[in-house]
Image 1 (tube, rainbow, N blue to C red):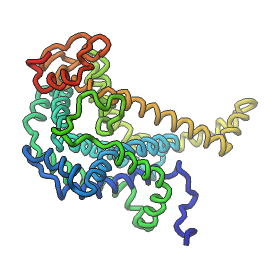
Image 2: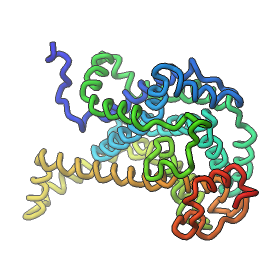
Image 3: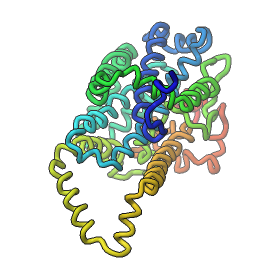
Image 4: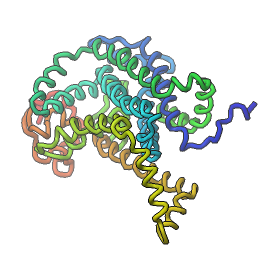
Length: 388
């Protein structure tokens, strides 16, 4: 019996695509649970979130699973994407639909993260809604119109419909084209069972984080102070990765391109690579053949060594791990000081607008001791025109 359910050639490197699919399913299931208790109204949104976290049996665990699952999804997608690049799947014309839908999935997943961060309507959701219009307002020509659009179009019910209906539908259409078409022919439940078995260590870690590192939801009895959680990654803040230029570069004309236009251009250029690289596979094979005939001496030894499967596996593992940890490091760089980076929501670094040009060292706690005073920070956040 055990032999029938043991994954063929089971190895952690082969299953990050399947792990990402499991995370999407888990996110769907936990989201369905939360739908039954959440009220998408301005007055009741956060009250129902607190009820889920503090009164509903298992609610706190489910909510924090819904919070931490996208973090593991991000890592799984990163590793899966890097490995696809190393395999050069973009020159395989048989995989071009898989490649295209895989990269387009980044968009609805990103928008699910954004809307999911706002709809609880606690302090993070409020300040996030301040940050995004300010950042998009830096775009040339259309920036001001986009900023007004984001502010005027926001209501909790609208974003709630986007979060539970529109973006999930788009996501599962892309997932269907990306993998389910083939899986339905290969017994999808057997596939899922195999991946659940291999992914058990990751699932255990996920449940541990959801149980131990829960988002504070007991205010006003226990008020979460702004500086609490410093140096601890909050998974809902990893979208700050693409906003890092806004945080560290000042008054640069390249800011909108580096954080908004650039990532979108790169996404679509990479997504459509198989379509404009037609014929590259044949050219590469010809190049390999020519290189094989010309290789002599050290070069021949090197290519023979690289053909050794053990060397390839070690080299691939090093590259994948290095790139993954580099990107995770950037996420940490953007989120570990997120309480102070929240200042960007009002003090827009790229424009110096909103509530006024910030002090020169407005995020440097060593030079502005008040930043270490939780009570002062709370007063400044909620009464910024009076406490500064």
